[in-house]
Structure formats: structure tokens, C-alpha cells
Amino acid sequence: MADYSVIGAGSWGTALARVLAKNGHQVTVWSIMEEEIAMLKEKREHETKLPGVKLPESIQFTTDLKEAIENKDMLVLAVPSPYTRSTSRSMAPFVKEGQLIVNVAKGIEDVTYMTLTDIIEEEIPQASVAVLSGPSHAEEVGKDMPTTLVAGAAKKETAEYIQNAFMCDFIRVYTSPDVLGIELGGALKNVVALAAGIADGLGCGDNTKAALITRGIAEIARLGVAMGGKLESFTGLTGIGDLIVTCSSMHSRNRRAGMLIGQGCTYEQAMDEVKMVVEGVYSAKAAAGLSKKYDISMPIVQEVNDILFGGKPASEAVTDLMFRDKRSEANSLTWEE
Image: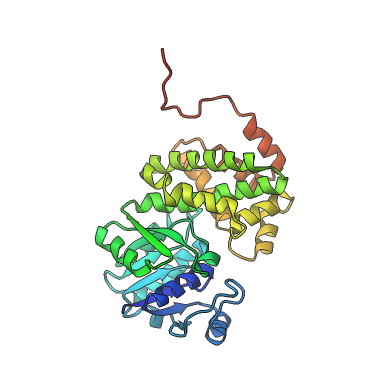
């Protein structure tokens, strides 16, 4: 039996803690919020973020970060992406040399354009950092619904260790060395999911959703490959797979926020209504910045930014996407002479 800690007691951190505990591991869950830990201890359930999902009695809860980190075999970092840097900085004094930290959040820092594993490595240089990602809603994992994930790490044995820790009868985990591709797919799909939600809020149909998903993954893959990610990651679970689930499900906070924006709310109003961190809002600026840095065309990302931060009406953004210059779908394909 291994001894693990989950740093962050949101819906995803709570769901993954339950998986690890059900797999026979000792699990500690940390949160900075005393009232959240008190609720989890008393109710054995996260009543606001994962209602109806009972947590095993074996899981321990704490607000003491040192206690949560020291002498653990693996740390699962599950705080929302805007808090990855500050939390990593707080963790650093207690992390031993070579400590395995698995990032399970999705996002890109909007000022530095750094991925979350890059941030963790910068703040905790002594750690061994990996990622676990894929098309996965905490609400469904909490109900033991079949789910697939990808463990990404520089070393094969590290990815396989994570695979073995989480794999169970309803969680299937694949391995990959493409940490960058996995993280970019997970972060950028949130921006496209905002666009899909905006289209839903405008009353668009399935045709529109299909267009956004397929053209969205084309944008993500163009940028991701230019940055050094592998095409296979963007055509797999952490690319198109994650994009499909995030654009189509009402569990998706990004899609729900997008719907509210499409109905006339500001992004601030939408986030207040969703009552959870909407990662796509933070990643949108970074995605636009990266598209300029790498000179990659990302029209969907640009229109989302114009809606969020430029005051552009959503209906006008749809029109501008539809009336862009004519072009071929795939430039790599050739015509007969």
C-alpha cells in the first residue's frame, strides 16, 4: 500500500482521491480552506462540488501542507490552474529531492505562457513532475463510470507508476512521453469549449458544434506541433477526446460559462454564476499570445478573446468566422495535375 496526498479538494481532486483510496492506497487530501476540510471530515462528501459521492472512511483530510507532503510516495496537484504557482511555491520547502508530483489541472499561465508542469518545475526544481489528463468529468468518475486518462512523464517508468496507481475497473490509463502535447491539449480545449458554449447560448445547432470541435482541434494541433508537441497527442484522448467531452457536456464549466456569455453575460458574470474556476478564460489570453508568438492562425481563439476582453458581440464573432477568406481544409493534401 502506497501513501499519497491530493493537494486541492475541488471536484477533480476529491474524485481522484476516492479512486486512489478504492485502489487500496492511503490517501490524504489537503485544502487551504478550513471550512472545506471540516465539511469533508464530517460529511465524507464534498457537498458543493461533488454532491452525492461518498468518500471512503480511510481518506484523511488536513489543512497542514507540511503534513500533507512529507513522506508521501506521490503528490497529486489538483488546484485550479490560476493557483498552481502560488500553491507550488508554498509546497516547495516541504518537497524532497526527486518527489513525484502529478499535475491534474489544465491551463496555461496568461502572463508567462508557461504550462502548469513548467510552473511546478520552476517553483519546485527538486521535484519529478508528471501529468495526468484526458476526457474526464469528476461527476462521472465519482459514479464509477468508465473513463480513460493518459499519464505523461519524461521517463517511461514514471508514467507506468502513475498508470498503476490509478488504473481500476472503471479507470483505464494509457502512458505517453509527450508531456507538452498533453498539457497543451488540455489547456487549449477549454478555450474552444467556451466558443462551443457561446454558440449554444446563441441558439446555434449541432452543425455549429461539429464545426467548432473539428476546426478547434485543427487550431490546437497547429499551435501544439509548432511548440514541440506531438500530433498523436492532439488526435488522441488528451486532444480531440478531451475537446469532445468538454464541448458537449453540461458538466463542463467552460461550456456552461460560454452559454451564459452567448446569452449576454460578461465573463465575470458567467464565472460568478458557474461558481467554479473557468479555466478557459485564463487560457484564452495565453492562447492568443502563443498564436502570435509562433505565427499560427487561430481564428476561433481570436474571436473568443475579442468576445471576452474586447466587448465584441458574440453574434458578430460567428459572422466573422463564417465569412473568412476561402481556403482548403487541409493544406497538406495535393490535387491532381
